Length: 65
Image 1: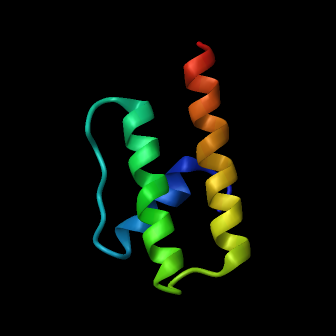
Image 2: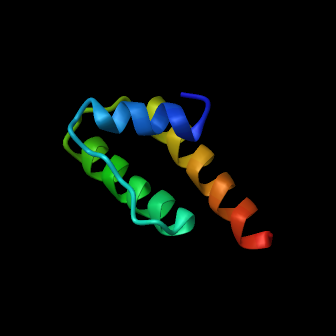
């Protein structure tokens, strides 16, 4: 995974579609969903770390705007 879009597509494979309307809240909710998938052992550790890094980077970027 290299983009937020790819993370959204990954979550969609598990039936999770996230849209609240607030971009930061959406990203934080995606992070929580990824954590659940990782704890359920449905994600590899490297994949999980990469996705978290992407989401946290995007959250930081939006908060600095």
